[in-house]
Structure formats: structure tokens, C-alpha cells
Length: 69
Image (cartoon, rainbow, N blue to C red; front, side, top):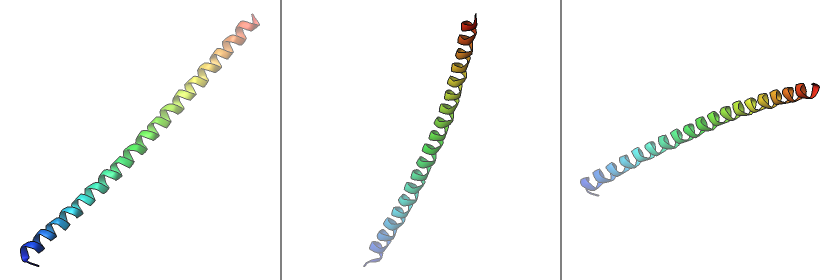
């Protein structure tokens, strides 16, 4: 193998390694982003459910007061 072929092959291997590294970083960032989004969604959903429960309880209280009158 000639020196220029070896050099080209080495450059290709280096670029391939760089691409693999970048690919791995993109995947890791994507997974972290999705976990963050899911976590935020769960928290907001929990807050919404708590608010709905509080409103339903308040409506029930008001209905009971009306029924007493």
C-alpha cells in the first residue's frame, strides 16, 4: 500500500470515529431531552389532576350546602 493510500485510509478512519462520537452524543442528548420532556409532562399532568380533584371536592361541598337549605 502506498503512503498516500495509507494516509487516506487513516483519514477515513479518523472521520468515521468522529462521526461515531458525534452520533453517540446526539443520541444521548436526544434521550436526555425526551426524559426531561416526559418528566415535565408527568408533573404538569399531576398538577392538573390535583387541581381537578380540588375543584370536584369544592363542587361537592357546594352541592351539599345547597341540599341542606
